[in-house]
Image (cartoon, rainbow, N blue to C red; front, side):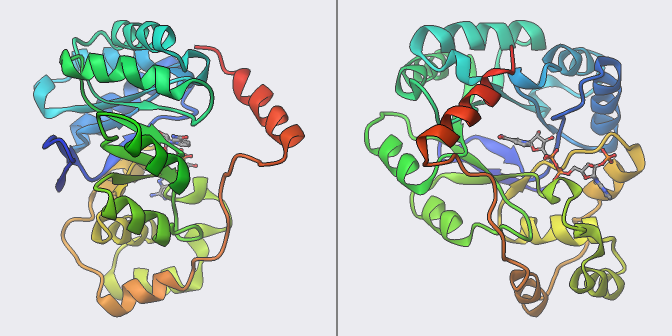
Length: 284
Ligand SMILES: NC(=O)c1ccc[n+]([C@@H]2O[C@H](COP(=O)([O-])OP(=O)(O)OC[C@H]3O[C@@H](n4cnc5c(N)ncnc54)[C@H](OP(=O)(O)O)[C@@H]3O)[C@@H](O)[C@H]2O)c1
């Protein structure tokens, strides 16, 4: 496993396992147990995923020392306020059955994120969280947040994949020393990502699967990636990416796939309200 050092000195694995949409708690627990056995040390959950308890049970069963694991969870938007963050963090710690969380993110850039951050800064200073960060922050929101807060976010987690490569966003994050982390690194399996001719060509050249080519591309860009799978074979495949290197030319070939737009909060008021109502349906 390779690691990156965050802006507060904390070391974070470059590759992890995401458990979004793994709502069957037995399956979530088993998946995390298998992932740790397969060598994963970073697990990405969230209050809104409804599986923190299962992740916690898997951690308790693990023979790997707690300090070697890196657990991420996220504060849901209904808790985006000072008091809400206090409630949300306590709830996450309890469900995960942990004394501290390695990385805690503000899950959506909506509502009283400044109030929430005030509390997360306190919890960070008290050692309840080793690093705090944000999620889906636009360039503007990120720079504003850095300017008007004491503790700089260690991470901005954003959607990133071969279709939506976020080159400019990544450059800005590097400039401000905020680590980029990619959600949906396989575009959630959409757009025939595993059948793209360019990636199949590279798969044959390096004798690695398309999934491995994609994840290796993230590693070489120094972007943390958290692919989701509940399939143990794929889990092992996805972590087996540290024994080869894509050439600069092949990195450039993957860069040509950049085309689409990803998830973006709508600027139009009515559309934004619909998105808010949809997001508010998640309960934590
Ligand atoms: N912060 C946010 O706002 C946010 C939003 C979305 C996601 N996330 C995080 O990012 C994680 C990953 O994103 P995601 O779950 O949306 O999608 P993803 O990781 O891009 O794609 C997951 C899909 O790829 C399949 N897959 C995984 N490995 C494969 C392989 N080697 N070969 C073929 N197919 C493979 C999985 O199927 P199987 O499971 O059947 O193998 C699943 O259908 C989430 O789990 C979550 O932790 C965060």
